[in-house]
Length: 335
Image (cartoon, rainbow, N blue to C red; front, side, top):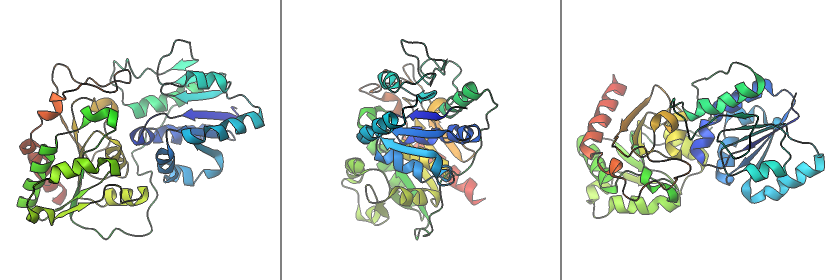
């Protein structure tokens, strides 16, 4: 049995969520192995600690983020054991070699030959990333994997006091602006919802995405502002999870918040164009996808993370069409 299992996750919140089933399957076969995970930042690390997967198996995990990688090295050299399983997405081949990983099980191809490869870039069968990740366990341990549809997050002891609201999440990473829907689209959708229902609108996301919200709300009438709550950068991750879980609907483009929403069984309306929802979209029976495909979409890939400068595919999604989907979604929920 492998003594040490090293997981390198160089990407954001969405990829952490899409790896939950991987970890669940890994825990079932890892026995006494220590599972060590290197996350992109403190945020991704914190999100993982808010799962029942972590809380129920805390003693099995050692968690690091890229900023305290020195501590990881010190631990590795102190125990002086080679890692017999490595799981990675990209940009980590030098680190793998430095950490003496014997057998590579990775999700992207490199110049050297790993023991097993699950190829995301050339994913011709359009297999969702959560399944690709879990397949790494299948390859490593020669077992059948289990894909469960469940809420992995812990429950907040303090119930949310908010009621009757729809969440907007329009942000994305600074290098992934091509994923975003237009601010005018969100503005017109907000106006339509407030004019035709009693719902309030909550904006969530990081503080850096507040400028998107400011642009959406620019010159909007007070009667709409009175029904808007701006929470960008004002919630903890656990508070965010609770807000998403208790919402009537979450509307947004491809980003980490959308994945968190789907993972806690919120109703989600996802807007896609530059990315392929069949590979990176939210999963669940409570998901509705609006996808606008043109000749050049989806353009996003790890070797082209910045996508295009003019995301026509997202700009062509009209607020009227999205509102119809919102209306239908909410009518179905009420039935």
